[in-house]
Length: 136
Image (cartoon, rainbow, N blue to C red; front, side, top):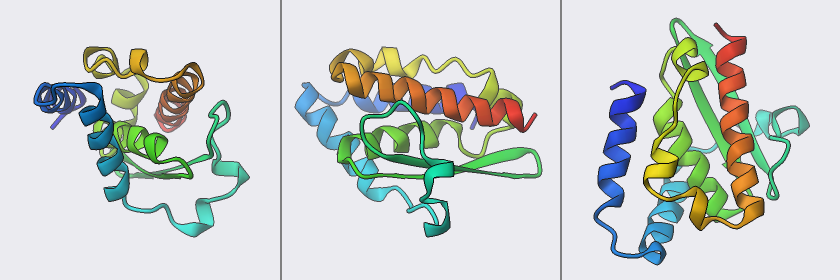
Protein backbone atom coordinates (compact mmCIF):
# COMPACT_ATOMS: atom_id res chain seq x y z
CA UNK A 1 0.00 0.00 0.00
CA UNK A 2 1.13 3.53 -0.63
CA UNK A 3 1.19 6.35 1.93
CA UNK A 4 -2.26 7.73 1.06
CA UNK A 5 -3.90 4.29 1.15
CA UNK A 6 -2.48 3.68 4.63
CA UNK A 7 -3.61 7.12 5.79
CA UNK A 8 -7.12 6.44 4.49
CA UNK A 9 -7.15 3.15 6.37
CA UNK A 10 -6.18 4.90 9.61
CA UNK A 11 -8.85 7.58 9.10
CA UNK A 12 -11.42 4.82 8.61
CA UNK A 13 -10.27 3.03 11.80
CA UNK A 14 -10.64 6.22 13.85
CA UNK A 15 -14.25 6.66 12.73
CA UNK A 16 -15.17 3.61 14.83
CA UNK A 17 -14.43 5.48 18.06
CA UNK A 18 -17.08 7.72 19.60
CA UNK A 19 -14.87 9.89 21.79
CA UNK A 20 -11.27 10.89 22.27
CA UNK A 21 -10.73 8.71 25.34
CA UNK A 22 -11.32 5.66 23.13
CA UNK A 23 -9.00 7.10 20.48
CA UNK A 24 -6.28 7.68 23.09
CA UNK A 25 -6.64 4.08 24.25
CA UNK A 26 -6.24 2.90 20.66
CA UNK A 27 -3.13 5.06 20.21
CA UNK A 28 -1.68 3.66 23.45
CA UNK A 29 -2.36 0.10 22.24
CA UNK A 30 -0.55 0.87 18.99
CA UNK A 31 2.43 2.05 21.01
CA UNK A 32 2.45 -1.15 23.05
CA UNK A 33 2.60 -3.18 19.81
CA UNK A 34 5.43 -1.12 18.32
CA UNK A 35 8.47 -3.32 17.71
CA UNK A 36 11.29 -2.02 19.88
CA UNK A 37 14.18 -0.15 18.39
CA UNK A 38 17.51 -1.94 18.66
CA UNK A 39 19.25 -0.85 21.87
CA UNK A 40 22.24 0.46 19.91
CA UNK A 41 20.02 3.23 18.48
CA UNK A 42 18.72 4.45 21.83
CA UNK A 43 21.34 7.18 22.05
CA UNK A 44 21.66 10.93 21.59
CA UNK A 45 22.32 10.58 17.84
CA UNK A 46 18.87 9.08 17.31
CA UNK A 47 16.96 11.27 19.77
CA UNK A 48 14.39 13.55 18.13
CA UNK A 49 14.93 17.15 19.15
CA UNK A 50 11.84 19.17 20.07
CA UNK A 51 9.90 16.44 21.85
CA UNK A 52 8.92 16.82 25.50
CA UNK A 53 9.44 13.10 26.03
CA UNK A 54 12.35 11.11 24.71
CA UNK A 55 11.80 9.64 21.25
CA UNK A 56 14.45 7.63 19.45
CA UNK A 57 14.12 7.07 15.72
CA UNK A 58 16.22 4.98 13.39
CA UNK A 59 15.90 4.77 9.61
CA UNK A 60 17.23 1.82 7.63
CA UNK A 61 17.47 2.28 3.87
CA UNK A 62 17.50 -0.92 1.86
CA UNK A 63 16.76 -1.09 -1.82
CA UNK A 64 14.04 1.38 -2.70
CA UNK A 65 12.43 1.74 0.73
CA UNK A 66 13.09 3.18 4.16
CA UNK A 67 12.17 1.23 7.28
CA UNK A 68 11.77 3.03 10.58
CA UNK A 69 12.05 1.76 14.13
CA UNK A 70 11.44 3.87 17.20
CA UNK A 71 10.78 3.98 20.91
CA UNK A 72 9.65 6.54 23.46
CA UNK A 73 9.53 6.83 27.22
CA UNK A 74 5.92 8.15 27.06
CA UNK A 75 2.98 5.90 26.17
CA UNK A 76 0.99 8.41 24.10
CA UNK A 77 4.11 9.53 22.24
CA UNK A 78 5.01 5.92 21.54
CA UNK A 79 1.57 5.43 20.01
CA UNK A 80 1.94 8.55 17.89
CA UNK A 81 5.29 7.43 16.49
CA UNK A 82 3.73 4.00 15.87
CA UNK A 83 1.10 5.69 13.68
CA UNK A 84 3.76 7.63 11.78
CA UNK A 85 5.83 4.48 11.28
CA UNK A 86 2.77 2.63 10.01
CA UNK A 87 2.26 5.33 7.37
CA UNK A 88 5.87 5.96 6.32
CA UNK A 89 7.88 2.80 6.98
CA UNK A 90 8.50 0.62 3.94
CA UNK A 91 7.91 3.51 1.55
CA UNK A 92 10.36 5.00 -0.98
CA UNK A 93 12.52 7.81 0.41
CA UNK A 94 11.17 10.32 -2.12
CA UNK A 95 7.56 9.48 -1.16
CA UNK A 96 8.43 10.01 2.53
CA UNK A 97 10.11 13.34 1.81
CA UNK A 98 7.08 14.58 -0.17
CA UNK A 99 4.31 13.01 1.91
CA UNK A 100 1.27 15.07 2.80
CA UNK A 101 0.32 13.55 6.15
CA UNK A 102 -3.33 14.61 6.02
CA UNK A 103 -4.46 11.83 8.37
CA UNK A 104 -3.15 13.83 11.36
CA UNK A 105 -5.71 16.57 10.74
CA UNK A 106 -8.50 14.22 9.55
CA UNK A 107 -8.45 12.16 12.76
CA UNK A 108 -8.15 15.32 14.88
CA UNK A 109 -4.88 14.23 16.46
CA UNK A 110 -3.05 17.54 16.57
CA UNK A 111 -6.00 19.45 18.07
CA UNK A 112 -6.40 16.87 20.85
CA UNK A 113 -2.77 16.95 21.97
CA UNK A 114 -1.26 19.32 24.49
CA UNK A 115 0.85 22.08 22.90
CA UNK A 116 4.08 20.33 23.90
CA UNK A 117 2.92 16.97 22.48
CA UNK A 118 1.74 18.75 19.34
CA UNK A 119 5.21 20.27 18.94
CA UNK A 120 6.67 16.81 19.44
CA UNK A 121 4.44 15.43 16.68
CA UNK A 122 5.69 18.14 14.32
CA UNK A 123 9.29 17.27 15.28
CA UNK A 124 8.70 13.54 14.64
CA UNK A 125 7.20 14.23 11.21
CA UNK A 126 10.02 16.64 10.37
CA UNK A 127 12.70 14.11 11.34
CA UNK A 128 11.12 11.30 9.33
CA UNK A 129 10.79 13.54 6.28
CA UNK A 130 14.42 14.66 6.68
CA UNK A 131 15.48 11.02 6.54
CA UNK A 132 13.46 10.75 3.34
CA UNK A 133 15.22 13.78 1.87
CA UNK A 134 18.66 12.56 2.96
CA UNK A 135 18.12 9.12 1.45
CA UNK A 136 16.78 10.23 -1.95
